[in-house]
Image (tube, rainbow, N blue to C red; front, top):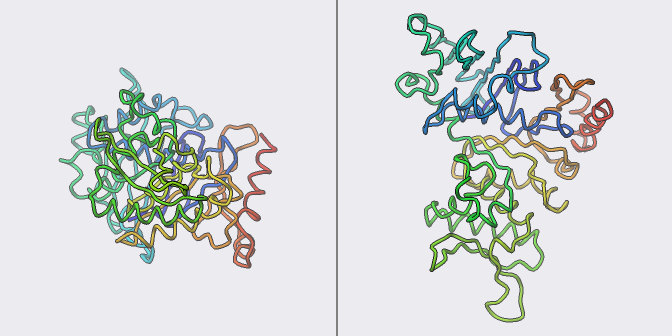
Length: 382
């Protein structure tokens, strides 16, 4: 299943947005244009349906409350509206599911986030419409969405499960290299890769061997003198480690552990592993960081290779970037969203390639040639 459309009102720096999406969607824009805020819409929904608790209230409070989430360019008193359409496969004409959520602050009291409306459609037929009679009798129920409640979401649980399985990767190499120093502060959802080695350790032996072998094949193409990648556990502490061997004049020499890897190597390994792991939605925030230009240029092809290597040819990837190298491959397949900040910084608009842009790319020009100059123009207006 994948998200085929997102429509929002008053989310962070997006006053209003309505966009269609494909399996691979590239978010293009300058710094501070809203690429992270766009991805955070999906992460917000993942937090709402987090099975370990917290739901809507935790998702809002962890982001600083409604005052931090609500777009400053919106009219006073307006809440936030999020709408998602989901399809099972790209060839479907109509969405299977549509989920609509409106939230606002309580007018009095604790000023908590409350549900202004929650609607669900299955094959175009409405199966949930809130507030309902029970909500009116007991307004406290509006502090929770039905989507997060297992005793209420049975009829549309596939939506909840979809958001639960979303993966977000923005690996910070230092957290992985020195994870023992940060154990107490590790985030539950681990967006920065601190628990990456534990993820590998928890993978079944057969899948672990297969993925490491595939990762090793890719690394040999892009890392000079690289020979072998393996996963081991320290016999004394039991802690998991990755080890790499480079060409060396002495047999069995040249091994390094992850704390000796370059930042780019760690980010590349995590990227490849993540792409091979999930058949669900993956959010990649600026995957080009710390990577050599020649490697960055191959990321679109890695996406395609990883997609083919998974048992199920499913999954969706959102990639935020402003890298000319990443967007230079003329074989990139997917949709493009061009984020353009307003002249005075109040809100961001989202454009898509024009018919002329698409023709130029079809003729052989790259997204870097055609689309990035549009974001450069917006930087000049800041």
